[in-house]
Length: 252
Ligand SMILES: NC(=O)c1ccc[n+]([C@@H]2O[C@H](COP(=O)([O-])OP(=O)(O)OC[C@H]3O[C@@H](n4cnc5c(N)ncnc54)[C@H](O)[C@@H]3O)[C@@H](O)[C@H]2O)c1
Image 1 (spheres, rainbow, N blue to C red):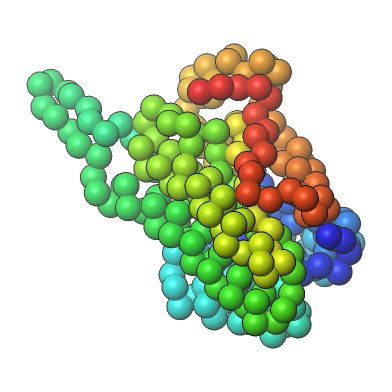
Image 2 (tube, rainbow, N blue to C red):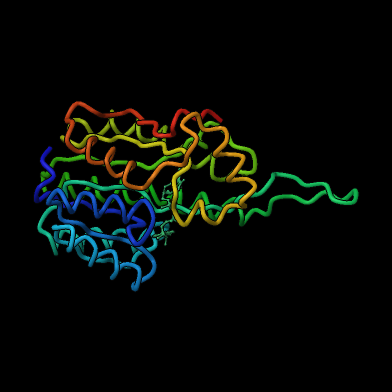
């Protein structure tokens, strides 16, 4: 698939990996639809994509809201005339242990802490993929859907919600690659290790230091390195149904 003039939706495109992928793809001539919750961040990301050389527009949309996702996809198709790709990148962290015992008292992870991550990181991916795939079939356009999973899909301490969602995203990648191939839609995943973004900057410094020490390459990944992989997945028409692991050799 040619990146030049391809229309690609990037959720969570306002900052971090989403913005880095959008800028990189814009540099290859792609046309970007950036989806996020904050207009100011989106404006900055759109400007960055344009100065990288690609067209870009912004869309305020909560990926966990069915109506908003459906409206956003219709708007993007109307604005650009087609859709050739989607990167399901929007995600949140709400880490915590399933149980904590303090002074003999058992504290449990609240249901809303579990549910908020499942809503955005799992249901959001389902909703965006369903709506984009349906629109691509309707418009008879071919292309690629990338799901951003995580090394945490293997099961990371303190991340019941996040690990479950990212494992689900990896499994859905395989399912959808099988189901959507007949329409000319490939589906692939990227499972980053620890990458330098606002998300990891919010982790406790001790936890970050411990994590970096365990990475064989002894450093965190850079957002541009994830973006480079996303471009590869678009351009390689035989890549589908698999998760590309980009983690410097780290195993959880
Ligand atoms: N940074 C890492 O080390 C790392 C590692 C593995 C996986 N990931 C995954 O990569 C993706 C991007 O991570 P990041 O580090 O860039 O995070 P980030 O927090 O820097 O950016 C995430 C973006 O998603 C947006 N977002 C959050 N909830 C949303 C919603 N409901 N609707 C629309 N937009 C929403 C946020 O506003 C933000 O702009 C996430 O799915 C994350 O789980 C990141």
